[in-house]
Image (cartoon, rainbow, N blue to C red; front, side, top):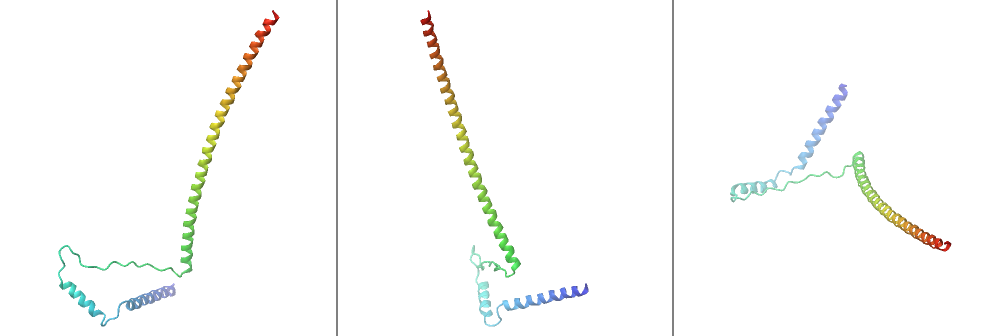
Length: 149
């Protein structure tokens, strides 16, 4: 257990040392480049700012990490993107299905309505035909009754 602890401590110390080395190399080198900045700062401090005017400040820079070279991170990102695309596709498919079902339901209702109208018209036509037949039989019976007497 102590060996693992000492390895972890050694790794952490080397990481701190590497970070410090990178931080030192990232800063501009001391020398002539610092003098104009110092003069500009002195000049900016010496000149009074106009009332209502704010001193110029540099825009904050956004640090964005470029794509990781770690294959596990790449896989995780690819999976996340694939899942997002799948969810969007599924949502679109579900919306299409819902629209198709709505259209089919509307068509079915229209067919049922038309069938009811046709049934009513057929029933009316059958009733009219039956009435005509009944009137024809009654007139034939009355005519036949007259001939027998």
